[in-house]
Length: 326
Ligand SMILES: NC(=O)c1ccc[n+]([C@@H]2O[C@H](COP(=O)([O-])OP(=O)(O)OC[C@H]3O[C@@H](n4cnc5c(N)ncnc54)[C@H](OP(=O)(O)O)[C@@H]3O)[C@@H](O)[C@H]2O)c1
Image 1 (cartoon, rainbow, N blue to C red):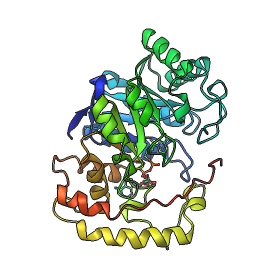
Image 2: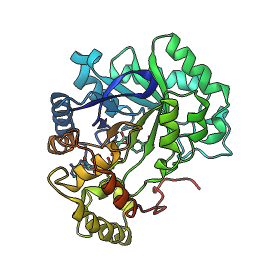
Image 3: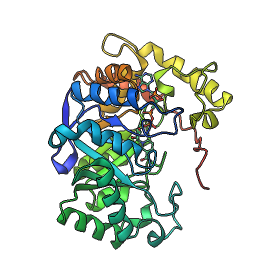
């Protein structure tokens, strides 16, 4: 496993981090035993960055991660998230911050997360949604200062709304934020236009999420794929969407070679090949997936030529999540 600096925080993070949504719930039947094995395998393979959120399984993901890292707490980096007080995603331009992220809410949620995680600090606290109009607002900035002063957090970041590659650009340029989490993958390449260059310029840590476009870019979902009962994706990935994605993913197979032997590794290497990226956090519930994904951190990034060719495979699909508010 290779490590990078999380922007100006100076914290060393593993190139492959652990995406902790799936182990919390909402992706079919929960299997804590398998989740725990995946977490343990990740730790053994050098993963030191764990991304979770207060809402993932209503604290369940935080509890599992807290339990897995208890004996090595000082050696790992935990990032969690404060939900908007409305519990509605994404946050919209016309929603005042007093209704979504007032200071006392951010502080109260952080206290709950610390309890779930069984720790007295989180390394990175993030707002679980973001809209550009909040850049100048005091609420979140005061909460961030307070939490840092109290030693409850080390760094403060935001998680961009889904497929919103421009929302946090002004925030990054303002110099007020330590980290930004954003969707960036072979389909969604728009962060490379403005967000990632701004982050490099301001030394803001970039956490890349959804590297597989919710599993699609691993090539393991096709029209015959049976989603487990309770997997939210069964509503999102309609047969016509899967058909469209499968056709495009087939075209990626010609990029497979010794350094990128599987589509999953190709997808992760694509993310790691941008110099602004600190860590990539695939969602993982199985030790086998952990093993495959960790192989992507071997120092052999994609060549400039490959990256130029992959630009042709970008796909801005505009498929909103089932729960997205208009
Ligand atoms: N708003 C936000 O802040 C936000 C939103 C979304 C996600 N996130 C964070 O980002 C993380 C990653 O996103 P995500 O989990 O939604 O999507 P993702 O990482 O693009 O895809 C996860 C899916 O990929 C599958 N997978 C992982 N490794 C694989 C492999 N080697 N081969 C085949 N399949 C593999 C997983 O399988 P299994 O189902 O079998 O585990 C899961 O179904 C989340 O866990 C969460 O921490 C944050």
